[in-house]
Structure formats: C-alpha cells, structure tokens
Length: 91
Image 1 (cartoon, rainbow, N blue to C red):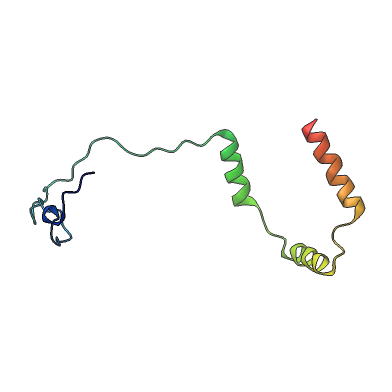
Image 2 (cartoon, rainbow, N blue to C red):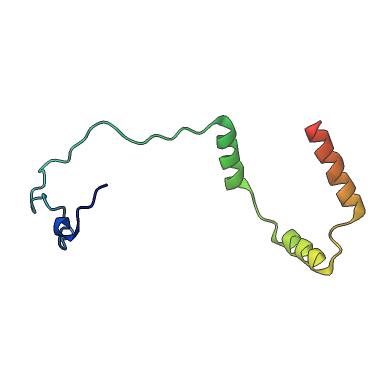
C-alpha cells in the first residue's frame, strides 16, 4: 500500500459501494449451482446421535457436585482406577 499524502485520500462515502447503481437489482435471482456442502464422518455421525440421545441425570449431577464441594469426590481408589485406564489406553 502506498500513501501519497492527504491529497490522495477520499472523503466520506455512503454505505453503498461508490460505483453501485441504486435500484439496479436483477429481476431473477442469479443461481450458479455452487453451494456449501457438509459431510460428516461416521464418527461424527455417531457423536451427533449420542449428543441428541444423551439424557442428563440431574440427580447424579447434583450428587457429584455436592461430593466435589465437600472434597470427598476424589478418592485414591478412583484416581488409581483412572490412572490404570489411562495407561491401558496409551500402551
């Protein structure tokens, strides 16, 4: 971009483009045959189905929130089980 001083700056312009003719709209909508397309993988389709079908167990969520607030949710047994599952997955 080159700037040649304030003499080359345009003044304020309207919202429309400077070369647009107001009211020059085509009578028929222009269709090009080009459109957006979305393709979901099989895993994405399964995830979408699970998200729609999943029911929230509000009683269980409330129970876990209370346990977290009390500091009794994380136990050494739960942490050991989670660590074992993680190690099984990565090995």
